[in-house]
Length: 70
Image 1 (tube, rainbow, N blue to C red):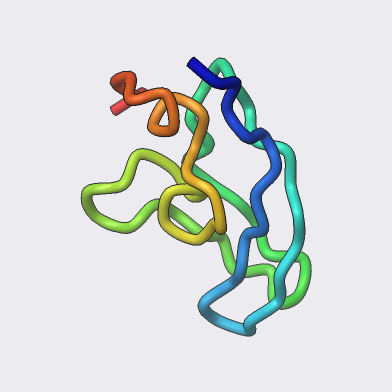
Image 2: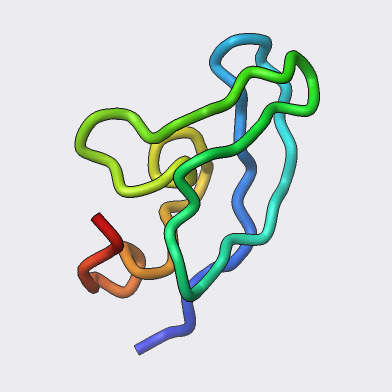
C-alpha cells in the first residue's frame, strides 16, 4: 500500500481562489475559510470533508479506502 498524498489544492466555489494546503491525517476538516472572500466552505452532501468536496486530492482516509469521520 502506498502512502497517501497529503497536499491538496482547495478552490473556493464563490471567488475561485485556490490555495495548496496540507491535509490532516488524523481528522476530517469540516470547515475552511477562504482567504480571498472569507466564505466558510463546508463539505458537500455525501462528502466527509472540504478536501473531498473542493480539493484536487481526496482526504487521506478516502485515499486509503478507510472509513472517514462522519
